[in-house]
Image (cartoon, one colour):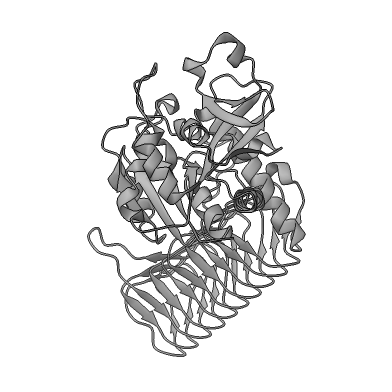
Length: 462
């Protein structure tokens, strides 16, 4: 394929979304919908992408600031031809092909795009349009052909005659054009139409009049070229995209027990032989290792999970690193900036926040660990709490290697528990504990003999 650049149209507001957010930033499988045509263009071989922004242009630019794209701006929305013209300054002196994509068409695949570009090159066309046959063409521009069947133009729905509205072949809004012809033709189009806009499809008629080669290249899968206009379209695109994502992971050796109830974002990575149970949600840029078991109702967001990790039912994990052979849950909550080292265990109803739990350490039940550093081989009893907040500031708890913490212990930070120390159950620890020491902090038990009152005594329940 000859050199080409992509112009991505993303200036429209998307009024039918009924949203305060510009349409192209609504998400599909964890990414703004416009991220998909960007990725598709790159996979098809495009090195330079120009995004034409308009509504909420700063938000659009901020969302793609790390994507190595250029921006042009359509200050007034005066039609698709006017939008493409806004990119002209970035293409001065460029003699190759310009691929024009829409930011609200996220399901186009690299395979379909490559075939389209190859046809454009092989047939030496100045304009190629991707078209599709639709049983319900309402709202779309119709592909016009002459008596010989040759492509001759496009007419928009609002400008079409009644016979033209019966045409089933429609314009997808995806074009490839010779750069010099494109910008020369854009100077010739007018706005004498129902919308008073400068229509990009008018360049086709100009090419025909000049005797140039124009073509409509038909594709078969209507889902690929469907634009997102409202929330129903958004939900349907989400479903298609998630099916593709799940199929890719299963093809790569991941077992998904029930694809219909499993939700995996586009940028998630999963190793082979991992098993994912129903109602699992894997979000953002999460990385899941090989040989893991992720049981039902787990939610993992932007986290790194090592190999052979077992997530038991109903765990919530956010921006956490869990290393190899860790066991988590059920009903565990791992909050941001936590690290669980190899072979450690975080058990049922345990919450961990901004803490490091060392290799082989265990917090098996009903525990809160916040702002703590825990060494190797530590056992933390049920009901233990790190009291990390004094009402104004957070403080650090340090528990060194091979410490034993008895059940129902409160560790009032800042505090340090030395290596191989023990803390008696029910203690409230406010001072450092030396290595190998036993710390006990609780009131002395008193027994009152003969306290029990028989049922016939006044005041007892009957």
